[in-house]
Structure formats: structure tokens, C-alpha cells
Image (cartoon, rainbow, N blue to C red; front, side, top):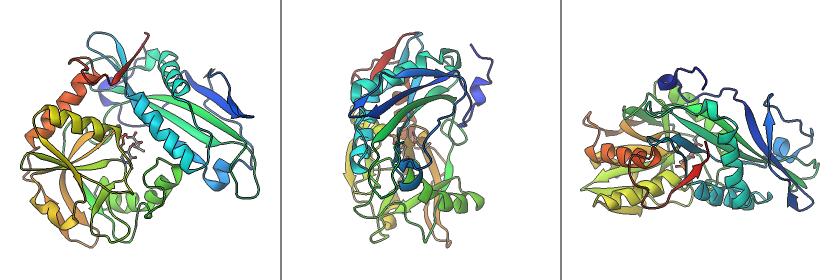
Length: 339
Ligand code: PLP
Ligand code: COI
């Protein structure tokens, strides 16, 4: 076991023992291999990932449970999303068996970096799919590389259920209608870096996007989906330009289990002032309550009453209890890893 400051890991990159790699060429994937040591990849300077943005990634977590078992949360769902990202950007599709095997191998190769149970930390898995074949004309590569990186992480923002402020940065959209907002490709995040920094420099750790067509509806946060609560209903936007969040899907199920109503529908920016609670949800942020939402030009769209909505506390605990093996996994979400 590494001697890390487990309760204060934050969400930062660090080198571990090894990553996992498989290469697609001539129509087949190579057997995934453990690549120990230096975390570098030698790629062709004309690789399509570098020029034409053939890159997609995923984010999921492995947890050391109360019972000592290791669980990966919903890798099948992340694989399905990577398949849709690959199809949208004309990349080779990673089969589910390879995806899950590589995720398990990444955990097993880095067991001494897997945070121990009881301090809220976990191991973040970052599957990455990129075009590594050379092309000069704009066309898909003839070679793809699939990698799984493992990094021990803690809270993405301040930690636990502490509230954060969010900003809508006027003048920047995340995803065009009929563009790539509903898949997890690198270019979406490149486009978000500038508004992210504008918000951060103004003291807002989170940025929120409106729909790009009318700027009338809530889409999602920069790295997570939007959830609101009103009249004991779990409300999350339906929009063709948001990333379908695995965490959101799980929380909708858990909200139903708790007896709440749930609805996916267009959410007008003008209606969120009446919500009893708003949170961001995603693998990295888990479920992060939002205190205030303002626009960069100074309009306040939402202000909480300063208290985390009790339903968010319940949902957060219900989700983590399954991930840490403290509650039965009755929906069959977790995949066990040896170790
Ligand atoms: N939306 C965006 C833009 C994201 O980057 C993420 C993170 O993956 C999410 C939503 C949340 O998705 P998930 O719950 O599958 O991690
Ligand atoms: C995740 O929650 O897994 C994400 O991908 C968000 C961010 C770190 C890009």
C-alpha cells in the first residue's frame, strides 16, 4: 500500500505503476497488455487524434468496499457511451469484453494505489480511445489505440456535500445542436476550457451551459449533469446536446427507490429560481450541491437557502453505500475485481 494522504487526494493526476493498452489495426484489437513504468505513448506525428480530434474518453471509478471487495461502478454503461462516441467520430469500437477486462486489469496492476475504505477516496479509471494511424486528408485513421489509466482520487471540488457556486459564461456554448454534445469526445472539453477559466477566475468553480440554439433552457455543467428538486420531484433536463450521465441514470433509479417522482424534461433557465435544490452529478463530482447560479453579466438565476437539500444527502449516501459495499447492489451495477 502506497503511503498517500488518502483523505486529501483531490482530483489530480499522479503516476501509478502501469496503464493498460490495446491497439486496433487491420480490423482487430490486440490482447490488452499491462504497460509498466513511463506513462508515455509514442505516436505518429500525423495521427488523426492530433490533427482531426479523433479522441474519446470515459471516466468511471473503482472502490474498495467495507467488506474488502473491490467494485467497479457500471463499466458496461461507460462502454456503451464510448461506443456511441466512437461511432459518432468514425473510430473503431471497443467491445464490452475488452473494455471491462482492461478496466479490471488497470485496477489489479495498481492495487497499492487503490484508496483504502473509509476516507471517501476511490480509484478513477480513464479509458481513452484515439486515432493513432497517420492521415493527411480528413478521414478516419486505420489504427486506434485504447488505453486505461488509473489514478487514485478524492473530491473534485471542495469535498463531500459542500456547496459550490456556478456561472453561466455568456458568449460561450458547449455543444452545437446536432453536434457532439451527447458524446464524450475531447473537442467538447477543449471548447470548454476558456469559459471554465473565465468562471474560475471570477470565483465560480463550476460553469453551467444553456442550450446553444435558444439560450433558453438549461443544458448541463462543464463536467456534470444538472439536477433540480421541486415538490419532491427529481428534475433533470432532457436535451439532445447533453452527455448522458451514468451517475444521473443511477440517481434517477435511487430517487425512484426512495419514493420520489422523477422527470426528464426541458428546464427553462427562468424557472430554476423556484427549485428547492440544485446539484451537479457525475462520476468525478458525484453529487455536488449548488449554492448560487449567476450569469457572467451579473444576473442571479438561483440562490439556495444555504442548506443542502435533504434529498441530495439521501441520494448521495444511497449511491456511495452501493459503491462502497455498505448496501446491497440490488440493481446489479457493480463489477467485482480480484484483489
Ligand atoms: N456531463 C459532462 C460534460 C461530463 O464530462 C460528465 C462526466 O463524465 C458528466 C456529464 C457526467 O457523466 P457520468 O455520470 O457518466 O460521469
Ligand atoms: C467524469 O466525471 O468522469 C468526467 O469525465 C469529468 C471530467 C473530469 C472530465
